[in-house]
Structures are given as structure tokens and as C-alpha cells.
Length: 168
Image (cartoon, rainbow, N blue to C red; front, side, top):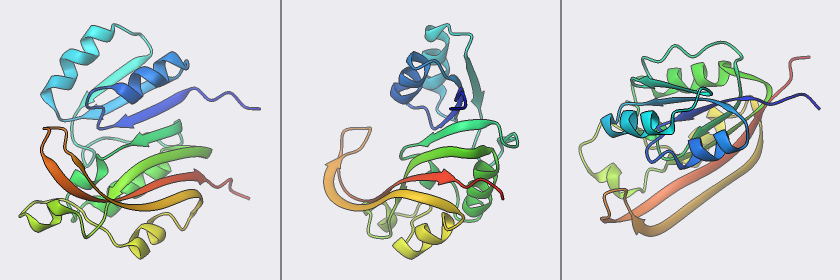
């Protein structure tokens, strides 16, 4: 089995996934625009961690670099104008056989009722985004939960795990 060692965490936030990936031995790239992430990154003091304080739209995704991409509740914050291009560039940064794990917001999410420059998708749109990958899991969920700020919200999310196909 080939060694898997490079991961990207889009929207690191509290760095829960980043810490887990580091514990598993991955070299981790974190991309986030939240200023508080920088100090959390500095506290980790890890040579296997690289941090980019920039939007996903502006990030220079390296070609076929990552074995794993994690994007939990982060990609929907990309503008609808750039969302598909960002997803395409992210997928190009995955090595063949690499795994993408992420959540995307559905059109019935409470935040879709607000005037936000965010991306909300239908199930068919999510399926279309990942039709060039082997979808391992695609669950659509509706639930009442809390936001990161602690306020109640009706969530409509798609949880997806997909594997980049090997080129034949």
C-alpha cells in the first residue's frame, strides 16, 4: 500500500481535524481566513504544519499534492461565482486515489434565507460536482443544531466522502 502523508484542511477553525491528522502522521496544510486560527496554529509548533491565511478562491492549489482533503462546513462560504472553480482546483490538487471528506450546505439551510454570498446546493448539483470521483458516501441531513457561535439553526447539509479516480 502506498504511503499517504499529505493532507489539506480547508477552514481549519478550531483545528480539531488538523490535530487528528497531525497525530496520524500527516503533513498538513491549513487554509483559513479566520484571524484566530493563526494563533492556534502558532501554539501547535509543528514542522509538519503549513498555514495559509487566505480564501480558498485565492489559494494556489498544487497539482496532485494531497492524499486527503478535509472541508467540513467551510466550502459553502465560497461565493457562488467562484465555488465550482474552487472545487475543480481542489480536486486537481488530489493525488489519484486520494480521499475528499466534506460537508456542503443544501438549499433548505436557514442561512440560505439570509443575504449572504454563500453557496447552497441541491442534491443533483452535489452529485454533479463529484461525478468524476468514486462517491463512497453521500448523505443528506436536515437537523436543528448549533452554529459555531452557539445560536440555533436548521441545518441542511450534504456529507460526502469521495475518492479521486485513477487515470487509466
